[in-house]
Image (cartoon, rainbow, N blue to C red; front, side, top):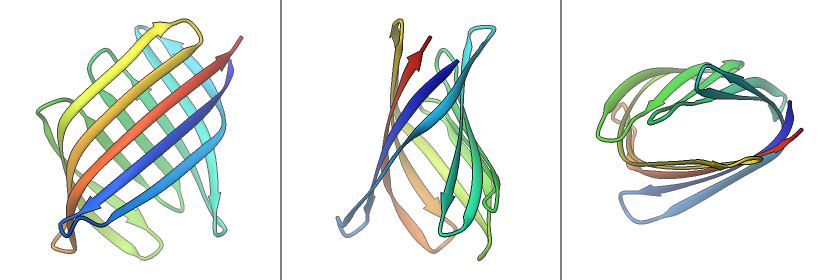
Length: 138
């Protein structure tokens, strides 16, 4: 199925500074077992990446392949460590999911909210909030 995904990420650093990233793009949406897969492509500054968001009952996984490679897992009260491979090098990222809300009750719209602490090696510590809205065209 075709759809559209809108993602807003807010990153709060230790000093309270907020960076906001908005993405809105077309996506392919698949259902497999009880999971929903949202696949979309990004092209930022010539860097091409394919992202897959897997939405389960109480967990979200975001995988990115291409010029940037990573797998991020979000499950409430869980800590995950992942490798984030970029053209600038390899970074180790630790996430600690504080809140995870998934709303799949509307037939053609899925909403998810993720709030987590993030640590990128000794380079950055902060808190991120991600809002995901998937609108499905049937």
